[in-house]
Each structure stands twice: as C-alpha cells, then as structure tokens.
Amino acid sequence: MSRFELDPSARLNSDRRVLIGGSPVSLFRLSARGSAIIDRIRSGESLAPGHAALTDRLVAAGVLHPVYEPGHGPTASDVTLVIPAYGADARRVQGLAQRTGAARTIVVDDASPVRFPEVPGIEVLRLGTNRGPGAARQAGLEMVTTPFIAFLDADTEVDGGWLDALLPCFAAESVALAAPRVRPRPTEPGAPAIAVLLARFEALRGPLDLGPVRGRIRAATRISYVPAAALVCRTAALRECDGFDPGMRLGEDVDLVWRLDDAGWMCRYESATEVRHDVRPTLGAWLRQRSGYGSSATDLALRHPGSVSPVQVSVWSAVSWVLPAIGLPALGAVVAAGSTAALAQKLPAIPDRAAQAVRLAGLGHLHAGRILATALMRSWWPVALAGALISRRMRKVLLVSVAVPTLLEWWKVRRSLDPVRFAALRLLDDGAYGFGLWRGAWRRRSAAALLPDLTNWPGRAARQGSNGTGNATPVGGAQQ
Image (cartoon, rainbow, N blue to C red; front, side, top):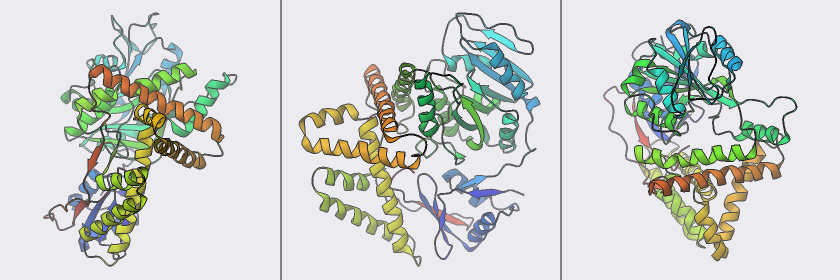
C-alpha cells in the first residue's frame, strides 16, 4: 500500500476531471479511474497497487508527494557521515556525530591552518591543500563503504533523529537524495547587533531555506536546488554520477542535484525535518557569501543550459508587462487578454473552462511580473541602474520594481522586522548577488546566466496515456 498527499498548488475543477498544479503548472485530464484515485488521496487513504501510471507522473510534475512511512527503508547503521571541515570546532563536530548516530563518521580536514584534532569515534582525513567543500565531500565519498552517505557542514546544528526522519525516503529505489529544511541558527546571547539583525533577516529570507512545502527537487521549478549543508544520499547513485565536482568551489551542490535528476534519479526535499546553519556574523562576510552564490551561476548555466536563467516566463506574459513599462498599458492589457483567450481554447471542454483560463492566466501573468521585477533588482540591476540614469521612465520602472515586491514581502513578515531594515537588507542581498553574477559572467566571458528564457504558452497537450488515467498539458505562464 502507498500513501500520497497533494501539493498545495493542486486544484480540481468543478466536475473533478481536471487537476491543475505543480511547477511549472500543468493541467492533467483525468479519467473516471484517475479521478477516483485523486479522491482517495485527498481523503488520506492508502492506495493499492495499480496507481503508478498516474501517481508517478503527478509526482514528477510536483503535483503529488509520496508519504514515506517511518521505520521503512535503511537505518543509521547503513550510513556514513561525512563532514567537510576548515577550522572547525572539534567539540561541535563531535556533537554532530553523536546526534546523527551513523555507523561511521569521517571528517575531511580541508587543509585547515590548525590541524583537526583526533576525536574518539571520528576518522580524520586531512587534505594537503585547501580545495573547497565540494572536493572535501568528494574525498570523503571515496572512503565510504556503506550503501548510504550523509553530509553535514561543520557549522550546522542538528537534533537527534534528523537522519532517521530522512531515511524512509530511500525505501523507494528511485530516490537518490533527500534533504531537510535548512534554517538559520539563532545567535548566541550577547552577539553583536549586526549578527542578530542578519540572523533575523535570514529567518525571513534565507538562501538556504527552501520553505515549508516538501517536493521534488528539479531545475527551473519551485524547489530548484538544495544546499549540501545537510544531505542524505544513496552512495551508488552518487558514484554513478561521479559525485561532487572537485573543481567547483561554489555551486557544486546544485550541480550534483541536477546531474542526479538528469540521470533519472529522484531527489526529495522533506521540509518537516529541520537542520540549523550558522549565519555569517558580519555584514562583509554576509555580502561576500551572497556575491559568491551569484558568481557560481555562470558555471552552472554553462553546465546545465536553460536551468539558471533569471527570468523563465512566457513570451506573452513578458510582453504584457513590457508594454506598460514603455508607455503602452492598453496594448499590454490586450496581449494579456488575448493570451487568456488562447489558453481557454487549449483547455479541455469542461464546465468551468473560462474561469479556469482566467485564473491560470492571471496567476501566470502576476508571477511573471514578480519574476521580471526581481530580475531587474537582482540580476540585471547594473543595466537597469544605467538606464535609470538617462531615462525618466526607466527610473519609474525601477522604483516600482524595487518598492512593490519589497513591500509585499515585508507585509507577510511585518511582525518580525521593520520595513526600513528589511528593505535595506533585501537591496544589499540582491545587489551583492547581482554583483557576483556579473563578475562570474565576465570571468567566464559568457552571458548564459543573464539571458531570459521566454517560452510559448499555452503548451500543446501530451498524447493520451495508454493507462487511461489522464494526460497532461503545460499551462503555466511562469515558474511557480
């Protein structure tokens, strides 16, 4: 028997024969049998064998998520813990090993200035030169003899049982990687005011925190990556895909996940399990970290074409926003209305087809507007700022692109941080990332990570599946 749960994005139409959701948004036309399967899932029932033709496709699309039963799958005795370390606190690392409870713990000392000490129950591998966390993890992988491997950064903090909460994912032979939610670690009492402020901001908008909704990890979707700060992996799958690239000092975790996905493995983000990670304690270190993230984008874009674009929206959504920006709002509204009508024609003949088309197109256009505004202030800000110096209209566009998304984000978390400090840190965060992005593009002499990815939609419907449970149509105007 198998259990599943629907993603929060999933919606059934009025006659329960169309399921819409996932990332990117897709529409699934359901047979009577497929509709009955969805009803059983919604009611929390377990499914008997014979559902995989439908559920596998819905899981792949991010509309459905498996519910893994505790106690099934491997145990901690099947796992080796690998911790890359550079100047790490030995007592803290020992605590990580004890709370993880793996069969074996390996610390890879990445040529720290002070050698990592001998600690009972921990094997230490010291590298001759500092090569970065990816190379350190790969060196640890080469020593592993267990069927599973867990990675933790030396500056993480875990609770006992974090490993046991992820291991049930591997009862499914298709799963190669499972990752917990990574949240910022609260500052210690007496920490400097800037460290406290940065930790508070990251609790609201941290780059390592992928949010509260679980799902499949796949490029160009809602959960497009996970950090290697905390991972559990199938050893054979990592070796099949050559593990971490030791030549990458940044972005090596994203690269690994995408290569696993390309090879047909399932990578899961399980947000119910949490691990905490230190926040950079000074503003300079924090900005350098953000810039480093941006600088890795070009390397990733060259390795994985089409996966790192700052804007992935439909051409019609893009045009419907660009036209008002250049002073043609009426024409922009016509384009938006026309694309909505075109989507309605692509949808199956269902009782509420017009309403579904308006909802889908409206959400797609709104998401596209948010994505375009974010790109202007995050990835394209040097060009946008240059344009604002010579164009009054561009100054207005840039002001709206900064103010509206910032205020909307702040409103959701307004009880946690005042708007001035939230806006200032958001601008610094995006500005540092954009600086690193352009620096990386210049270093590699490539604009691959700067170019938009404009797609045509509505998409064509897939051919009817032989199982009779339903077929899918891509309908999204933007990644959601």
